[in-house]
Image (cartoon, rainbow, N blue to C red; front, side, top):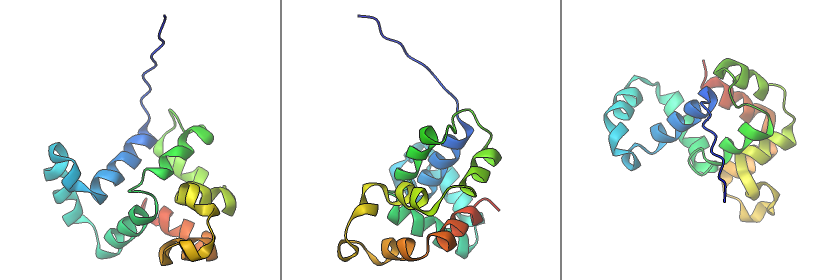
Length: 131
């Protein structure tokens, strides 16, 4: 049996992985010092945004699925962030909420319902993390 392994460096995936580590630093002991130092340098607003999206994206894991769908592999981070400005609301909610975006609103938490109510405003909040 032949196996094919492909190693791809993706700056965009590195960004999302960093957001994941910043959101749950206690799960990444090798990066704990970096995460704590970085978290101290962030504003309260940025920490709240980081936490909000961590809570609704399975700690930034759902949002990683968009990398392949949008062809973000090997893109610069800035190009990937710009791509988020051009996706429609349905794609945005799908990537942010994963499979939960199709659930009845009664089964969603308040943050998830807010994303479905105001996807454009919420997408602007995601993009605010890059500034």
